[in-house]
Length: 198
Image (cartoon, rainbow, N blue to C red; front, side, top):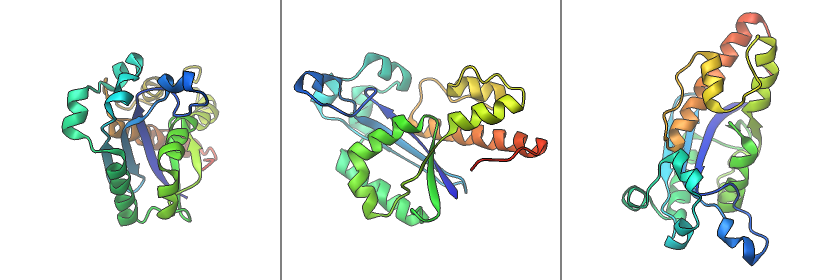
């Protein structure tokens, strides 16, 4: 399967809200980055509503460095962002038959994509399968003698000897970093003759 590396920057940890009391904890996507195994890449920045921005987690914003002024200047509303993503996926022929999404923490990114974009991505027949890079790193990294106790992207990059993603960062930097980590781990595994899981 061909891989589309993906990373999201958000205002919080989850897009799901079950009760009115939890509304203030709802997270939204601020940027989405895509890097294909074959090279092309794409990013879109999304401007939240003032209400959504008001609920943003300071911790999340510390990680991604987003500011209201930046989002207003460079972002587009969610529906326009979805249209841009669909157009790019179509142009690159990223489809459900040949491709999978790979993420650093697939359960995190997948929940946001399903919540905000699922019906639209089905229209373009985008990949439904998601692969989490962390278990692959833990499995092969331990066989390669790497320290797999810590599993954040910065630690993984250091263990693999590749450049870390900058701090703070937008989603495209996270997707680029994930691809570097993937390529480096696969190269080491191939040298040692280890079976690659995906």
